[in-house]
Image (cartoon, rainbow over all chains, first blue to last red; front, side, top):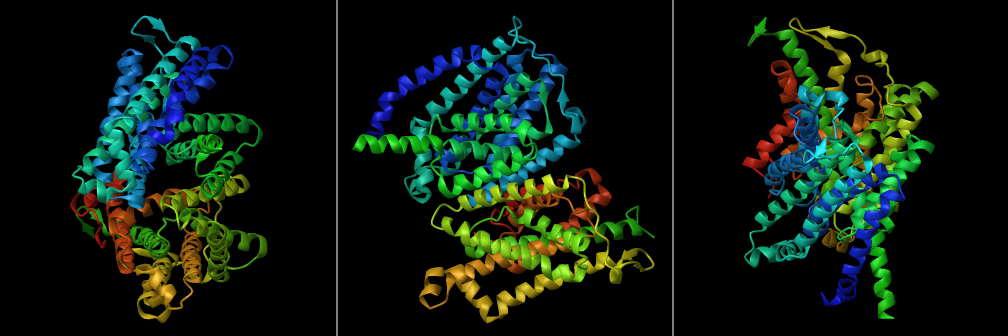
Length: 316
Length: 293
């Protein structure tokens, strides 16, 4: 910690400032756009917990985002539960799916881990495509936002925004606590040197699995919330392109940094929104170019580079 | 004639389709395994390079009138050369880092290739005519076999076994196997390992492009033809393990056949059967059927 003490001292102020910005932001920026950023931000933070802190590259996180979205949509639209129950239901479903994925994927490491999660999520994609209840190619349409706790009407964009903001803060807090707990320290130890962690007596598989389940659940929480915001769960949420997108957000923002994924998500979502009108199908190409540039020249990401800059300035 | 209540013609034709898909799995997973052996990266762009192979053949035919047989050689050379450029300018910079960066880089490249072709040609497929020599079919009595489909299996297997022979039985192959075991030692013995790596990546990519040309007349030539295929091939690679060349070929063909059988007896399951087998293999034998743990 001593190396980062400057950051550690500044952190509460930074989070406080960001929290206040989050509270007043919908009065300055279009709320739907902000909600999209927060949903993807939480998704990327959840993903980063796994890759940035446990060193596990999952290429199948779309499965959790999408499954939770579908479960939440079906619960709210077809069963008629209130939105908060829908979000919890989606989160639990994603957590269970994460448990299944995790048990299988942690049997291998490195590149195989990535390929297994990708293949499993592709299986989920085909299942969602074929099952009748999910609406196949059309997805789940017309999901009502409903009334939070049966009282607060969420069709108002501002109330919806504060729900999304609350969900994001809860998710972010869980991730932050996880990273800074003894459990998080062990995850980092596994990332740095797995054989040594094993020889120190840690049940590495159990730690990896727990990290995977937490990450999957929170990705699901983001997906369930996203379904309520857009009143839609679609196949794009379960497609492997989405799994790639969350990798890009995390990499661009800063792998293994606390705030990086949020910054990365905001950047990618803004870019996509801006570019969708002007360049159309070139969006994929531009995303690919950013990917390549990040890997080749910019591996620390936006937040990582900023931290390095501040650190260098501090030394001088 | 019926077998398990299914007409032999249906069974035969689905098995043939399975064998064709299996040939593509074999040739693609072989390329991935060779690249992984020496470079330690998974080439996510493999599917895109397969797609580009098919497009090179299609463009050569429609724009320049270059026939199928020339394309069969031309497309692997063109796309293989592109692979060499990628290795020299980008992948080379990543060898010192975590192997996952190679996966991420090639993923980005796959997005670029796919996006460019989608912008140029849309997502509707282009058809490519079967070359004259291979048109028509043979009636075997219990089923009808289109000659082109039989040719795919023969051509793919020839290339697969040729590659196996090159790696297991030639001098060049022995360098390659030695480089896979211990690159520093091979370098110390005076063999140009960086050149060997470049050649290996180019060859793996050329295999993908060759498969693309083979596929052009049976599947629609389409910018997205590689991306869904490659994920199944990843599952094939997990099932087989990337340790053995022969293992890749056998696993690829076997899974193609199983997929064909599933299409006869339980069509709804055919899209996921390979993934389900992957799950079973992971539970029973995590290192893969031919893998060394």
